[in-house]
Image 1 (tube, rainbow, N blue to C red):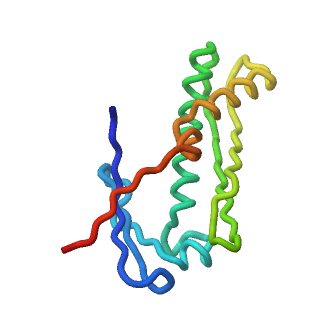
Image 2 (cartoon, helix red, strand yellow; image 1 turned 90 degrees about the vertical axis):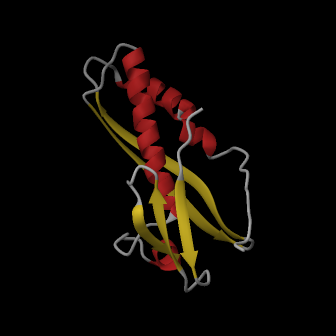
Image 3 (cartoon, one colour; image 1 turned 180 degrees about the horizontal axis):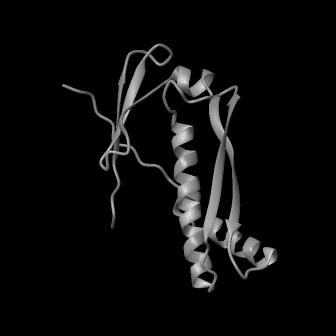
Length: 145
């Protein structure tokens, strides 16, 4: 079993507080996030937000899964440009991710568009992040002290 880890440190209230994200690899190192970067600032210049990170993880996972699926079918891609858009909606009970839209443009010599779409659908279903968006989530919670 492989494990990947990231940490979040949050200081202050939900609305006025702020946090920083770090990851073991160093890809995230003191990356700021807060309510403003999540609900008000869509250009991302003030920091990131959980939905943007999910979108990046999903786009990357899907592109890699598609490359593996294409290669396994004898169609090595020259390039795959994948995009994931995470939709966050407000409801009476709070916020929820309502859907993720994946978009991909492939440069794959010798494949028909129909076959490319078939393989892309298979990659979407097999992508671990696609699968994780609808799974049980466990939690360990404790107070300092």
